[in-house]
Image 1 (cartoon, rainbow, N blue to C red):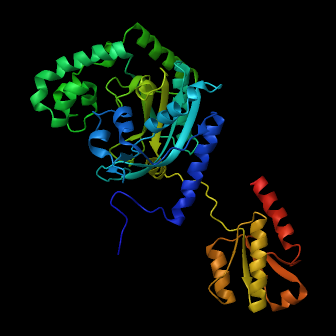
Image 2: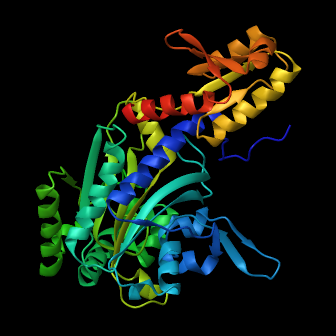
Image 3: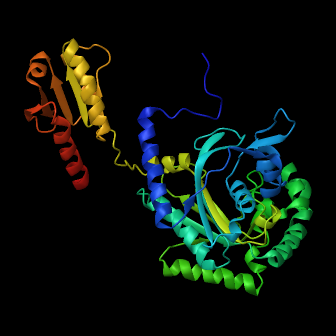
Length: 428
């Protein structure tokens, strides 16, 4: 028996309805925030992620699925969304679009080779947004509000927003030197990865999971102590916008993002729900002010966030939230006799063309078995068609909630049910 590859999973039909509900909600929120969907290829040239994500990141060094095509070109299954979106932004010259900033969102499968664990798979579904073209702290606040609304709209309450500033290039340069001076005496005590990071990107040491308990971590210089006046003002403006929106936040000066291109605002949203797990991060994002240039475009500021839908579903379970899912069938047609069976196929087809969720038996079950199937499908109405009804040009319609049952003309039954269904959905 062939099984799914390690780190992947099948989403079975009984769970897909939950995914549809979440995806539809995310599409709705994107519309209210005036973000447009973009769909990029599942694989890109490897160079895109080496340049766009950063050679010093774990993603590029350890987690990418990279292969050569028949032409000898190195391609990589996309491990994250921002680099692809920015590549498309540059390639299609979106900086020249009349409406600025360009506000985009995406949703789809992404791939990282890491040890599979609860909520972290090798193939995962990511939702994310990018706002490109504005250097206003107000757009940072909008992006954070968007992220919070994604969770709140689905009923999550045990949320904690954590923010930090990485400052501009000057601030980061000064902080980088301070980190190098601080960690160099402890170099031999750090893991192999952090010894490399000390030379390449010492900020990434603060994000290390293996060395997080090392005494040097607690005493590491804070970026907030190295922000120049402009960066301090930017951070204060962001906080004032969040406070105006009544969005509560904590400041964590040790928080960094795993990608090299972030500047100024970085943030994470955590779940404080009991039983959610040791890794509490639901979502992360931040501002990147050099990525468009790195990928061949003009100097363009940007900000975005992304999250795993699998982890969102974990948070819903941890808080015991049951979403209102539409998994009921509108109509199930029960038939007895060869001619009635053929007519039932026509009735089901006409119901479906009218936008009514309908089905019938395809297993030659007896009438009792067909009624049991209607119950399993949670059909709101059962239509019964036998030889006698067929001869009279009628069909029996039974309301499964009230038990009421009436005969209707075969010609008009679809019109009758369509009126009931539309009225029920409008009032539901």
